[in-house]
Every structure is written in C-alpha cells, then in structure tokens.
Image 1 (cartoon, rainbow, N blue to C red):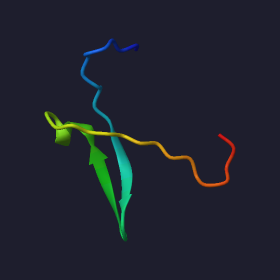
Image 2 (cartoon, helix red, strand yellow):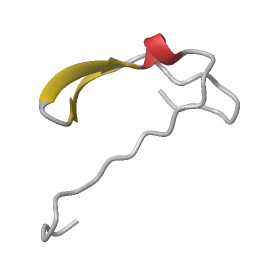
Image 3 (spheres, rainbow, N blue to C red):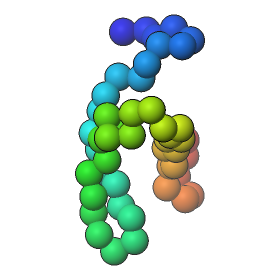
Image 4 (cartoon, helix red, strand yellow):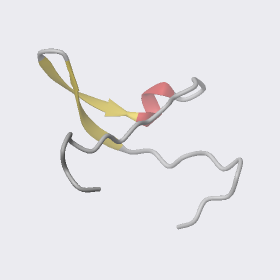
Amino acid sequence: MPLKIGDPAPDFKLNAATGEKQEEFALSAHRGKNVVILFYALDFTPV
C-alpha cells in the first residue's frame, strides 16, 4: 500500500532493545509526537 506525502504512517509494533531490557515499541503509543525511526544494519555486514 503506497503512502502519499502527508498520509499518517500505519501502526506497527516491534521489539526494541533499550539498555538491558527488551521492550515493545508501538507507533500508536506515540501518536501526535515527532518520531524518528532508524533501521541500522549490523556493523561489518553488506547492505
């Protein structure tokens, strides 16, 4: 499903590692806030 500029991002959930614990991140929990999502490939892996 393509999005157009200005469309709201679809909701999703993912596991997030913050320090020592694992947490679930849900985009819907941050509605109305500025959110930056970064997907980082592991070091020394071909991308």
